[in-house]
Amino acid sequence: MATGLSNSDHSGSQRSAESPPFSGTLSRIYSIGRNTFREAVRDRVLYNLVLFVLLLTGASIFLGELSGGQERKIIVDLGLSAMLLFGVFIAIFVGVGLVYKEIERRTIYAIFSKPVGRGEFIVGKYLGLCLTLLVNVTVMGAGVSLALIYVSRGWDPLVVSIWPAILLIYFELMILTAVALLFSSFSSPALSALLTFFVFIIGHFSSDLKDLGNSMGGTGARWLFRGLYYLLPNLQNLSYITPAAHGQTPPPASIPAVILYALVYIAILLSVATLIFRRRNFK
Amino acid sequence: MKQAKLTKSDVALVLIILIGLTSAVGLVRWIDRHRPATASNIEEDRLYLNTATANRVSLGFKGLVADWYWMRSLQYVGRKFLNFEGTIRLDDMGQLNLKLLPPLLDAATTLDPQFMEPFQYAAVVLPAVDKDAAIRILKKGIAANPSAWKLYHNLGFIYWQQKDFSSAREAYAQGAAIPGAPPWMEAMKARMAREGGSRDTAREIYTRMYEQAADDKVRDMARKHLMQLASMDERDALRRVIEAYKAKVGRCPSTWRDMENVLRALRVTVDATGAPLDPSGTAYVLVKDQCGVDLDPKSEVPVK
Image (cartoon, each protein chain N blue to C red):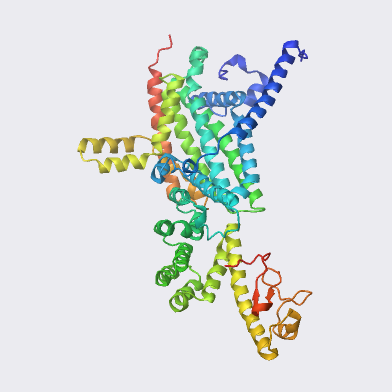
């Protein structure tokens, strides 16, 4: 990876154009993040958008005959679900390789030979992939909006009302990226991908964990399931696709709370990832 | 960039790909032709996932899975409909043996309880297949959406079809009490109590269904019922005209022209031969030997 931290990388006007607007830690995080984003673009991660566009175009054209007049709802369900699914795959498969690839290619030695902290490296990597996901989600959201305008033959209120759900999808993907990064900080890519996928599944079973805890007879088991319920990320709180297809938006008070929950959880995950990564010996 | 030269092995590989693709298409066609028909007991096998499991394993994609069950319901009914020899109405599909329809609609409505279209479909199609399942699904919908007056209308429709006018009245009464329910829900409640089995009640129900339906097939079914009701009124009126003619002349009319003046006075729409037209625009048939009137078999108006 070209971190953008080396003095020899920059010269003249190019340097002034690419130099980060911050200094110190923020500058280093910015450089790592920017290069992670560039690398994702170079690796053609955003090519999934082509598949997404084909899926939506096909659905817009053919759903009329199959859905009994429910094209709008199905376009939203399909579009937002595909957005989540594609995002989950990117978060998992790109996320687990973020650290591993640097170690495998031995570029990590070059990076840490410069004044870059391990925490800065983790956060920079994380933000770079989040930026990739942001571009992905925004373009997909615009695609769903256009598909809605097409099937409605004009303006449709859903074009606007789906965006809070898209925002929550993005935060769900941010959490998963942090989970992937955490696992990849100490494990192999295959195992990290598997574990992250498990967290995605369990995150959507949160209410079942709670119910299970409440229905358990033994105090120990009850506490165990309750503990798991509170410890594991509750992704159900961020899932608003189904109501969004009916034109519903999350209650205004709940959006900041859910976003705050996601941010707190991400901070925890990144802190744990940094703690583990700091103790890794690359010799 | 240097132009890549096409070697002999490249040409051989392209040929293998082309021949392979052609062979694959041919083989699939042959296999399709020789595949034994699926036994009906396998085709109608229960769903692999029960509703509760489907709800649980659909993760964050409940809406999409509900859509899939909904479209599968439509395809299932459509396939049976196409394989049926003869004509059949959407609300009279009992003879199609739609065994999988109740679990399919149950799954769609459990996964997305705010998805209104499957509830209406359940109210229209299911009673002829499984009346109890239809009522159960509608009641589940009402429990999940207590402020959706349309669901009470759908439930009232099921009871009305079963000629259970007191339950229908109760459903309309509960729906009418919901803020935002249209005034005709209240009127329907009164009508169910007073004249549940009348033609006017049927007309009112199908008119509202026609207005509310998002699905073209449901709307078409309501439209045909409305045409049928209008035609029943028209045929009653025409029979009275024929009776009056017979009483006056002493025999049945031989052509519609015989009653031309009366029909004109009644402002009945007629075609070039003077035959009155039914609501679908097809001429009524004069049954000369019985002094009666009937629908043309080619008419779009349902006979029963």
